[in-house]
Image 1 (cartoon, rainbow, N blue to C red):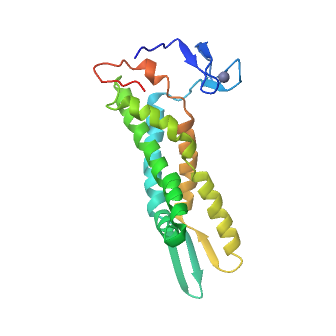
Image 2 (cartoon, protein in one colour):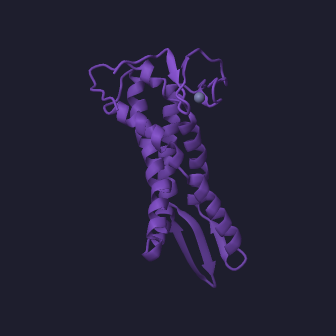
Length: 208
Ligand SMILES: [Zn+2]
């Protein structure tokens, strides 16, 4: 597998462009179709790793704390994200539950774990074991993280139910708000430059 760090290929129309240095906040766009080729990153590796660790902690809180608390005539009930997904998966809602589990739990978890893994080794100027695999999957799963859709659903549910019952957003909802911001922040970063920055070393690379 030969690497051409000076060239960049447009993901949408396959045109090849020569890479040039960008100033802060500048974006390189494809001259043919206008798609974003790459962006200047103001975050360095340490900052990105710190944000990834923060996302991991918030992810844990978001998944174990109650998302919503419902009280009616002295009785109350609360559920966290995983319990809600499990409740959804019973009977005919199985497919919906599966999609919800993938987009709300599996994809954000993979994003955090894969990015953290790659960055931990990148700090030591090394490619992590499975670097190529992790980098490809980070790119692939990016469109499938949908915590913001879940958040919108929770807010709509709270507004609708509050007319009939006493509904309170739990700590899980607040943690999901923070998680959505953090995931957007870390997933938006263009880490493809790591391919060029880190020497391939003795790690076994496989071409697709
Ligand atoms: Zn293009």
